[in-house]
Amino acid sequence: MNTISSVFKATHGVMTTEVGVISGDLELRTTSDKEGNLTLAITYVDAEEWYTLPGMSYKLYDTRDHHEVHRMLVAVLERP
Image (cartoon, rainbow, N blue to C red; front, top):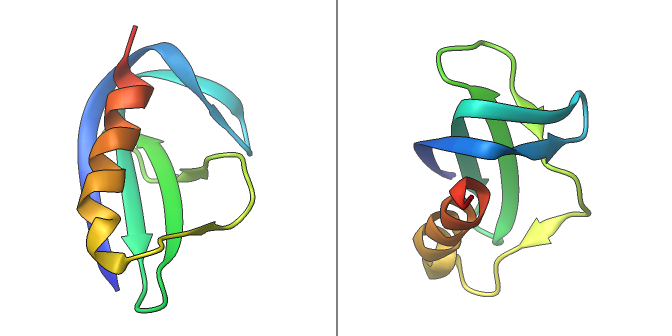
């Protein structure tokens, strides 16, 4: 398992499956396994409860792309 985490500010909000839209200082965590299955989780900075992003299952074509996909997700989620 490979996990990457980044803190960012979401001024427009991010939709979650469990509680709807959250905004402010957030942390995105992406985890990939050896088969390329990708798990996306988000939380408020320093909070204990994690939420999932809506969508079906996520899979990387190549597990080496995990860092780049994570970086792109953060860039999209924090844009105004």
